[in-house]
Length: 200
Image (cartoon, rainbow, N blue to C red; front, side):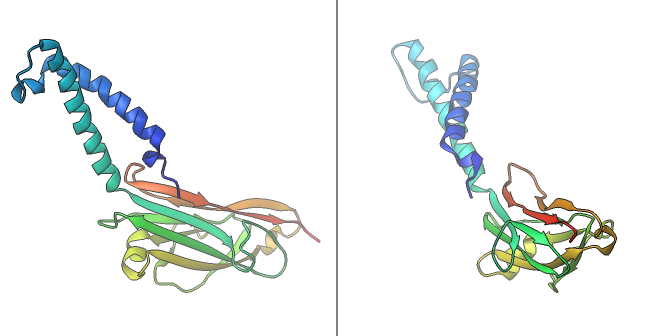
């Protein structure tokens, strides 16, 4: 999974932004005067900007190292497809969640959402909970995956079929997942499953 905040473009733009901030800080206080005795006062501004920029970059890299990567992939269990067609027989789907990076104090969850016209049967798992407010939503705690899995991977199975009251008309929708949590703490990647139904 490619983390946008770890990309070279983001780091380059951040360095340029930090250099601009550092220049204004250096105009107020030239930290280089505490460490160096330079003959030309103009060099103090340049050296101070370099010091401030380096410190800000170091703080950014430290913050990025504390991020948690969460990747969610929803596919059909048998053929591993991300697009399926429903009929009168149940189809088995898989929700695979990979958690990497900083695993300390993970309190957020992944919400898996099914279209209203799909009947869902979740396979038994102690880490999987149905939402009290919406029967089409299931909650998966990230902390339970990090604690109960040796390789920080959680795999959850659902059998789906068309709800009988919607059998008369064609339908198309998506099984989605949402990773709750702060965007700066979590690097999120979600691959959805597209579901199509057409009456015979």
